[in-house]
Image 1: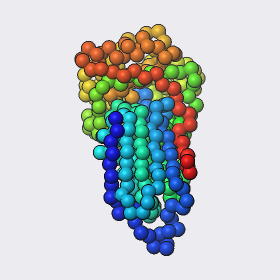
Image 2 (image 1 turned 180 degrees about the horizontal axis):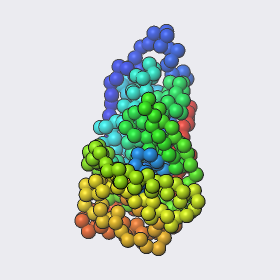
Image 3 (image 1 turned 30 degrees about the horizontal axis):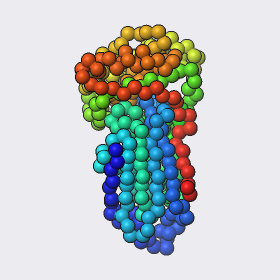
Image 4 (image 1 turned 120 degrees about the vertical axis):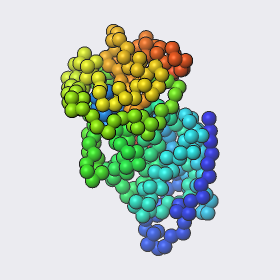
Length: 330
């Protein structure tokens, strides 16, 4: 699937003064970025952790002749919607406005393997790609910390963008001033990721709207105990603890009824090799941690959706340890 969009944006490619030229692109002709998908929350870790996955959004920015409008071609998962929402380009504009930068007219080619509105960080990947492209085309004025801060402001939360930027398993906290503290932690290679995605889109805004403004203290304590247990289980290799550690009371109970079959998928019985199951991000994808990439486990998770007449896609994914990758002058 492909879609094209042309944007006549006077803020990009506009004539500049001599002072502006000091902050305008120099000699780069093209920049390419690759951004991984991500799963987040992993049960009890609501809005505080994410895991980068080997499923990618790729974007290429090529300089266009002066005066021609910005042109964007998208392909892959949800191409037409990508072009309509245009998060990548909006992120580029956000950076230029915040930093007082000027970018040349560019042609953007975007291809994504990440399904939209699925709980796998598609919007975060697009936003991070836009921030990274704007930074590269402007001579790299932004630190990694500032890139993460801008991406978080645009996304509204940091779990997906932090994991996509740094790679691997990332825990984070957002300071009152909006800066983000992010720490990359080792993810064990023998802990496998299975993702089952029902063919139903669930926008993050809709999933967040289902959450209560206030929670019971007992539920908050329940989650705090289990996210601490989750980290200990990962670090000590005590995977039998994950079944309990991935339970949640803060977001999954309120979101599981938004998609038919989701509640049943999250409540499947434990079988050999299955270590834990949770909503991936805001959903509707379900992520399972397992000892092996076992199709039998994937089918158990998919069956409740099938009973409701919803098709699914199963992905056996590896953890991306590299995060955002950038190539220039290619």
